[in-house]
Image (cartoon, rainbow, N blue to C red; front, top):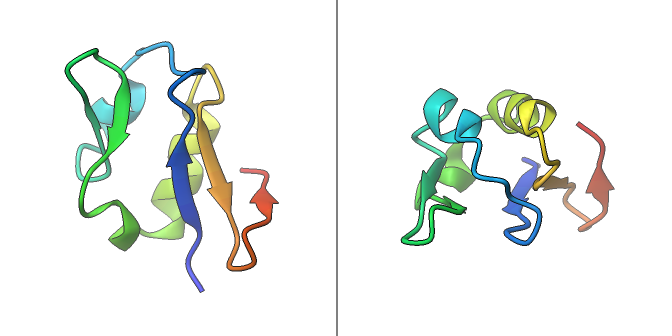
Length: 72
């Protein structure tokens, strides 16, 4: 079962690393905070893990099929 990805907007510092590296998964909203695209759920676990690891503010969260947090 694939990992579920979420963005904690209160933690997002809008560095743009995730948007630049994975535009198929992440985008900016009107306030320049990161949001998930409509195809985010289809991204590979590898992409989700890489994005979470590279997020400087730790705003990208991962969860397993039981809804338990997963460390990237």
